[in-house]
Image (cartoon, rainbow, N blue to C red; front, side, top):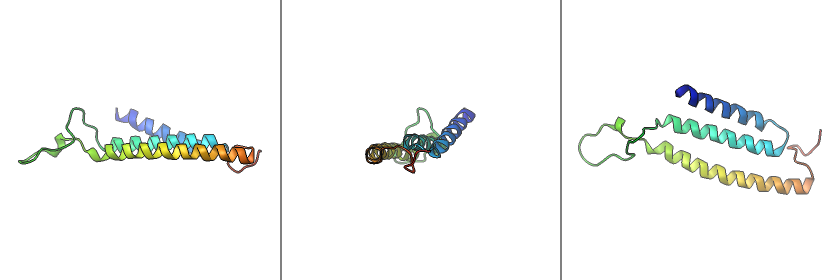
Length: 112
């Protein structure tokens, strides 16, 4: 399972970087999205997901911290998803306005 997850993160990151280097603005936006998905998966994987484990420890007495899920990576990924959605929407609006003003969707503004 670890190999599948690490391969998925690697493929998402490589595809995102490749799309970031493309000349069209829409491809750059998709590359940013893929890269953010790769980072979110990486953060989530580093949090060691435990199935059926409660995220909060009870009060009093000795507790085994290995039996509980760490809520911090889950909160970070949820926050990152919301922020990436907002920035993607902002980038799309900027791209639409830029295409309307310049008439092209190339990053440098020139057709080649």
